[in-house]
Amino acid sequence: MNYHDIITIEPGKRSGKPCIRGMRITVYDILEYLAGGMTEAEILEDFSELTSEDIKACLAFAADREKKLFVVS
Image (cartoon, rainbow, N blue to C red):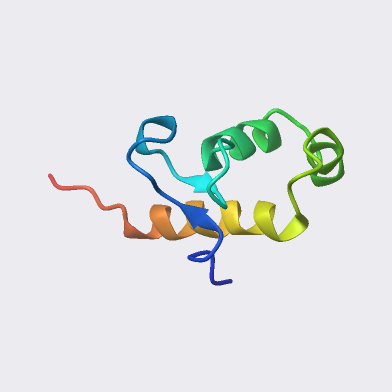
């Protein structure tokens, strides 16, 4: 999935954290909800401005970031 059009980073918004489509909802927020046991349907019900694609973009962004991590010993 190409998340680049969905995940935005603006220095003046949420301290430059990756957000969804310029809103104040961060990728971290969505990942926390999912990790806490919320389903995609529950998130979409609580945040009517979000779409299923937004949630998938958060997961793709996190996966891409994880892939780029490396350990220097």
